[in-house]
Image 1: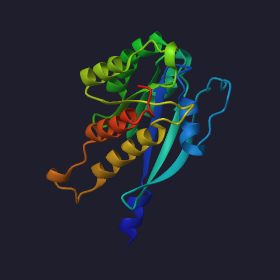
Image 2 (image 1 turned 90 degrees about the horizontal axis):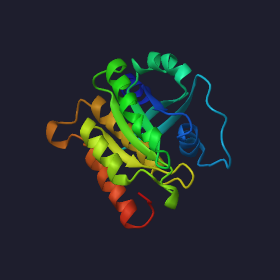
Image 3 (image 1 turned 90 degrees about the vertical axis):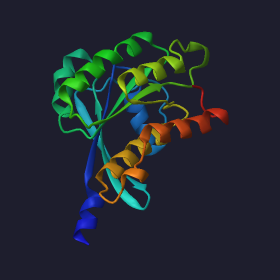
Length: 208
């Protein structure tokens, strides 16, 4: 019983990274509170976290979600948190080409400082942007394929795919911990995200 309890309560450290202004804080608030605050948040200073327990196949997974500062002067602080991270969500803003171009540098830092088996998800945020979009869905998809990471687009404003992003990560982490899962039934996070995102896009609820 204690073993089951401990397994359910194990904390999975999940870190949001990416340039300043891409919507990391808004994404976290939308997932945690189901809200979007009109106007801009003040830039995150340093780092802070929120605990969120999610249910994956009747197993409670506790995500400790860290919101990091994107500014260069805080980068060394962020590096220190990579080492024991279980998952990293790397965000860019689909209306900001520079934030997308900089994801290569972020991925380089992740590869340098994070654990080899960390779950990495590339997220194009502000998918509701419409004509303001400058980074196409296919651009993000191509980059993710190049680096072998999972990809999706989200909108912290409308909530599109926000829950899916965190639930996909939680599900992947849960299955990695499960010693019962045999090779045939192993969870494939990329396929899961692809299928769920396709459903959203074909039903007209995703702007990617």
